[in-house]
Amino acid sequence: MLYLQDVTIKRGSKIVFYNWNARIKNSKITIISGKNGVGKSTLLRAIAGMIPLEQGIVKNYNNEIFKDKIKWGQNLIYIDSKSGLSRDLTVYENLKTWSQMKGWNTSDNDLQKALESVDMLNYKNLYVSQCSEGLKKRAALSRLYLSLLFNIEFWLLDEPTNELDQKSIILFNKLIQRFLENKGTVLLACHELKLFDFNYELLNLDLLKK
Image 1 (tube, rainbow, N blue to C red):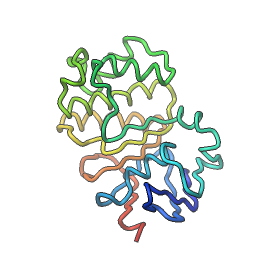
Image 2 (image 1 turned 90 degrees about the vertical axis):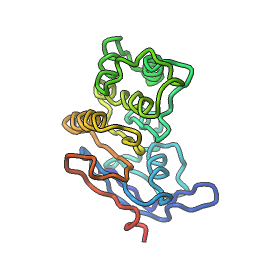
Image 3 (image 1 turned 135 degrees about the vertical axis):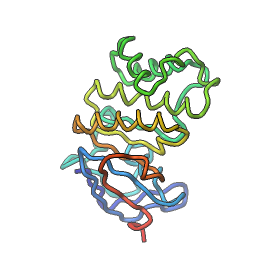
Image 4 (image 1 turned 60 degrees about the horizontal axis):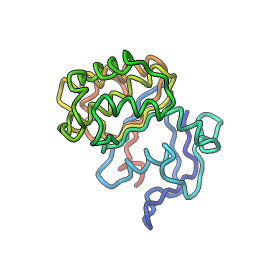
């Protein structure tokens, strides 16, 4: 169980969460919903360690996750709504460089399979600057396949289905299903709940923050 205890998070001068408590089940998918501006992205970035907490703690079971930020960062994959790709590299080069930054020893075969998992193999030599928004999103999501090879426990995904067509959403669902079968935990910010064809927990920030 991931516990958020008495958590306060600010963005600039704005308090987004104040003295807030929540529980997120491990080995499940939790969809974070709510209207724009309610704090979905802020919450994911804070759990990922990219926004400091003003106060409070986050625990994974009994371990405070930010006591060892490096170890926590190695245990998760965070993909934001902007995908985080270099325009000056090809799709393949982006994935390879990202894998190297994670310290993973991935083979060419691993990288090809990752791209194939989101139907991006035919676009591997395309520069990101030449890609549509849908292709960029799929290129970013190919990282999820690689995480299946390295015992990653958490996926933190911000609006991962934006710009995806129906075929790509089906492939994305398959990746999530494999991760859940491996006892992975998914936190996912999304508006379109009907896109997912499996059971999930719902964290509705519109209700919880009233």
